[in-house]
Length: 362
Image 1 (spheres, rainbow, N blue to C red):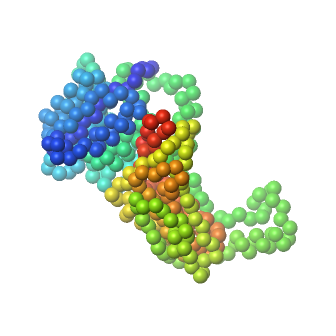
Image 2 (cartoon, one colour):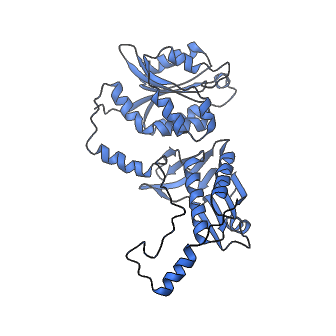
Image 3 (cartoon, helix red, strand yellow):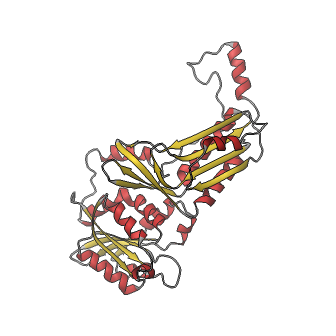
């Protein structure tokens, strides 16, 4: 197995950035994220066009880059030439890569990207090229999706075999359990527990009757109201969220307060920077509306922060009111699970040693 550091190339394709009229946020972000995984051997900003992109790719290969990411020029405007430029010099394509990126995307506009990927083999050197869209959020999302594959891609470019390293299967299995894209648990929302469901619970006659009264009510089937749905840079006020979902018909008001913690997987964290896609507010509103419609909740309020957050700051706040606590629990859990899985917000964690890491999950 090839064990040397991966050498990346980053190419930003933008007329405006090439002319100095706009800062290259996407290319800068790509370099930051990829530097956590290897060495960025080449970086260039070039105007849209066939020759400009192809020349930049060849220059990146000469600089030693084996995995090259382009950002920009993958849309459907008359100046979007990047896929044509790259396809013209590929030895063969790997269509599974753009399919994976699109399937993992949290934004609907990913369907408009004409991203392609494949291998260039000139007989002497080989490189893997991936075309990503031009927005910083799309770059963060794409790199996060491909992150587990980069080492294997680099190994294959150096004709490595397919044998996994000792313990690799176990490691991948463990990571899958914590992946932001792992299949969510299926909660059987109308299968309520009973006193006999757990053999360790021995209810007296009074307790069993009380349990039955509390858990076997008829769900209140009505369309709930979303009183607040917001993606904001302002601090979240949990007391306000709880107040606005109160209702005289609600016997239960539940809240979830997600705060920035000081550690992640054994690393000490000092702060988190959240970046939201422009579609995030609409996505959050749609999620809240779905939950309000599908669950027996009276009122729902939910907010997610973006920007710089310190330890203890609230990143996600949600409150739900319902007639019964089981309805409220189910609605709140469904809301939080969908926000974590679907909301197009990414985070950059900064650690105590000064390093940082982007993640494709809120």
